Amino acid sequence: MNRKEYESEWCLLQNEFESYEKHSLYLKIVSILALLMSEISGVTSIAIAFILVVLWLQDAIWKTFQSRLEPRLFQLEKCIRGEAVDTEFQFNSEYRKISLKGLALAGEYGRQAIRPTIAFPHVILILIFAGQYLTR
Image (cartoon, rainbow, N blue to C red; front, side):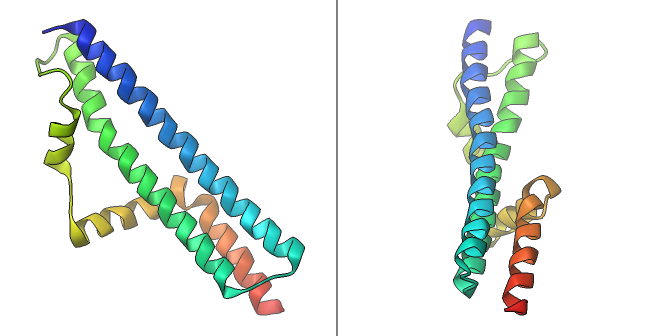
């Protein structure tokens, strides 16, 4: 066991984990700006609704990627505390074990999309857009 290598891997993955949070926030901001620009320009095309939905789904995809880092981070933390022994720098091997395909992957994206921390503000923005669309 080389604690320093576990710590190095943990730092790398933790930084990546946090970067997904930033990307998620950026997607939410882009969604807000898309709706704002739609309102300012007076354009209430159904294409705006599709853009909002695509941004919501992209946010769910990012958060799914982020969620796949978490088990390895917990595993590394156990190794650092000396509670477990594992091989260092095995993220891809561990990731492959939980990797999903086809409908299972789509289902995972869907489950992420309906989590409150992801759905907000996407659902509200879509409802605001729907209200604009129906009143024009």
